[in-house]
Length: 291
Image 1 (cartoon, rainbow, N blue to C red):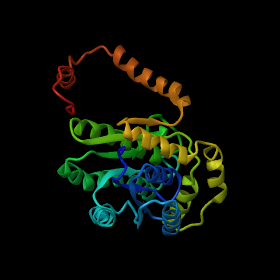
Image 2: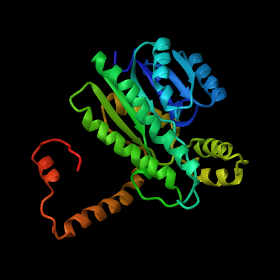
Image 3: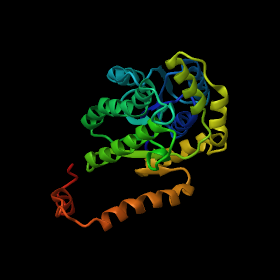
Image 4: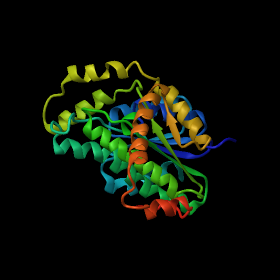
């Protein structure tokens, strides 16, 4: 029996999009799945569809930004399905626009969902994973907007850059353990994120959603990858213990330009301060230490 068959997983954002695609793929792989989402109606529909397909699933309606509740949600998931060994942080929101046009309330909301929840969920499950000593895995979801500078999405991009840093650091912390880490960096995937987040942001600010803007922002996105195929790709990558999971290679030239700029700045610097002792220690194999 191939892992994760027989294991229990928890997936956030499981009512639609990539989260639902991953939940479907996990069920197909023989895993039991705790489905977490803030949208109770859609979540109930996802739970029914997966059960009708023969899956063992449990719906757990929950706002993942309520970080103080993650321990109790972990308990509820394990009461329903047994020990969780796969944590998939997929839920995310898009909000605000440029720095000067993004209310602080929206900035904090985007970060609470996109990065605070990833930290809180990992902090809740990691002690459980380590104490059991069995193979386990954490998947975090970022975006190409977490690797490339993009104008007009200040809160979203900064939260996704933070997710990349969290996941890379977590991988280093967990080297040599039974806990694997993967980072999903999707490009355009046909999900309702702009409509869902647009409605949530409008509710947060006490105003009507601008449907025209949501439709305009979604036009290209909805021509993107099938979330079910992305879900299958993710489960395959997790099975193979792959760290970086990308959905579109067309972003490579953009990424190369960013990294060339970083490398050029270091290569052309005159070294006026002398060698950096932290970098020298790391080069000598003394571990990943922070400057």
